[in-house]
Image 1: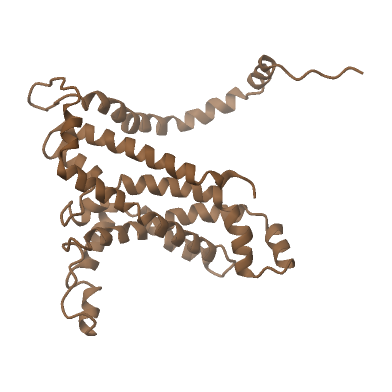
Image 2: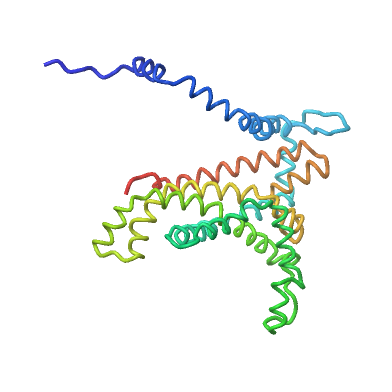
Length: 306
């Protein structure tokens, strides 16, 4: 009896090549073209251009010279950079808060309740709000006569206003609270998609076996959400490390809240030291890459079937 030999790689490649619907593929890429051009111009080109820039003393008005590793050596002895880096790393503490809050929200709005679409929309609204606009709104909340301080003073809970954005001890945490509020809706949508992809039969089988609502959540729902949790955690870690708009809008980097992304922006566009600003940006990019790698390694079980 003759057995059929497995297809050779070249044969598989020809089969894959001939199976492509070129008309459909071309139309798909045509629709993506505007987004690809924008991403190439405003994301990839600045990253590529910033690398050689980091080795120069580029100035808008002066002569540009190749300075080698001088910008990176300066960075190692720059106390403002180390303070900003400490705050950027500290900002990652907002990630577990966002993830846990988003999962709870997703579970709540996944229930077949009347008018649940209104709640989903309401929780998602902060995502489409500009970070600058949200930052200004939260500044009003945090004002010493704002709607947080006013009732606390009126009820005698505190005897003097809390200076949320000018007190070095709490300013960064106050900004992080706004980031958490803004991020809940975004990651809620990711987890909601994950919840709706879980087969109902699995949850029903667990209930038949005697599992309560919490048991189903713990042993069925959360394990099957792990791939979504990995993606959401990676995205929120990267977002926390490169945060800038919230800090710029609420404190401008004062009260010990400066972060590396904002410091890089200030160095390049306020002090016109583009070479040093590019070096700061590249070091931060490498740190984000390292954090992402660690997060991925720690969550590598996310794609393993239970």
